[in-house]
Length: 228
Image 1 (cartoon, one colour):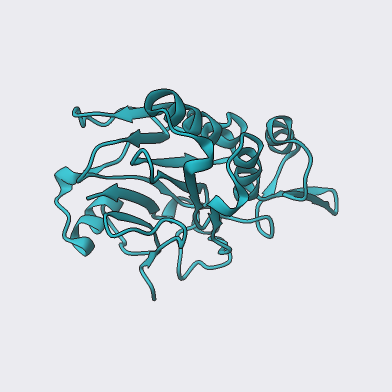
Image 2 (cartoon, helix red, strand yellow):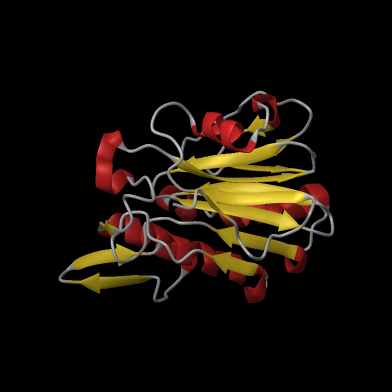
């Protein structure tokens, strides 16, 4: 089984960008990435995720903070987030050399965390939307993600109408990954700059961790990006 999924739109000799499949059973995802890629733990940064819309601008201080997105211009550090059905998103501005990693569950999507992260890149590093490449990793998809009216309404309120959700037998099914893509497009990210995985974490329990599938027994996979 392929352990790392590399988005085709973020490729360079001086950058690492990937999403993970199941690469560990116990412990933390950063431990596994460190071991698999021979990267020292001091060179991996992950925030304390709480389903917020907080975006951390990482500088020389590497103490973990509560945030669900990280952006930085620092080199030789791998930034990442962990998920188990939520949407992992990686960002890269090749001109300004700025990277980002975002954890977007339905709450983060309703709070427009990806749009906020893009705004933070433009405000802090003078990035331009047209120069930002986005990779959206494996997550639970519309085929399997049944939600209540409240979740559907909260996401639709900020995303608008679209085929990212459907109603079947009185129930709503939503694609949070597609909602994030729509939100990115709405603020000027070119469609050709966006790569999206077609894999559903719930449909592939042997390949991915899924909280909906395994409940409290689910582990985590991640999305990571770094410049060297």
